[in-house]
Length: 259
Image (cartoon, rainbow, N blue to C red; front, side, top):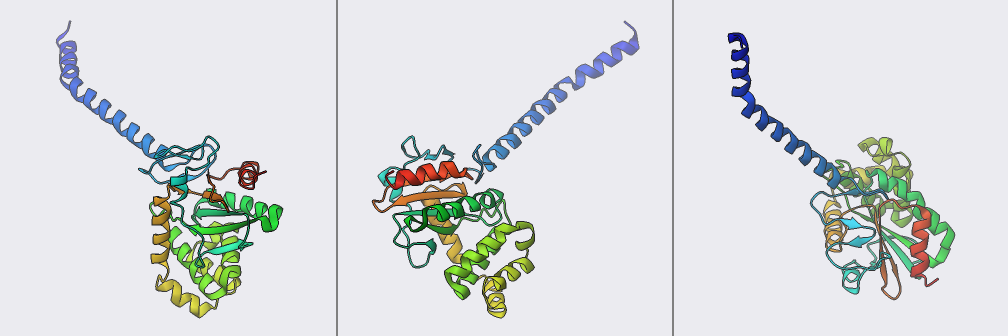
């Protein structure tokens, strides 16, 4: 072997351990990134989840047993906050079944699910009602909390009708209406006074309420958006996670109605 060849072999052997360490390190980083992406993105039904939170599997919460069909145990159902006058309800307040949706106005899966909820209201009429609650995923969606605050400002000014109109408008074009100017336009279109909205929005008047709502949702097992609890008058409750198709939501509603 020539001296030149021996020199190359010596250099290669010298740096071999370092190359091995670098290779192992890169493999570890790729694995970490893959795991984070897996935690942040929802399952096949669609949805956005919070990393580090208990996962949802086919409508069941991992921290306690649930029925195969997504029905919660009595203990789990008892953790879902009940309907109050502070809720913005669409439909019949005395309905046999209530859909309690936890949503994020910047979440693309929530935008996808919104027409599904509206279709249910149109089909079932007075038999069901729909409550919209906030669950802003602030680490993923920087406009989620401001838009939730804006929705509450509209509700203060224009009541339940204005609140729901605002939600419809924002979900009709998230790119346009999540910006400050877009939120203001949507608010005024929904019946809020411009000056009053500006004062409420700029002071972050309802951020505390929104965060408290999200905290209670987490305690009830919500880990991502959209997450919809289907509850009947007997207190029987089902969890419908993600932007499921209408047929899936309808199946759960029918079960809650005793069909």
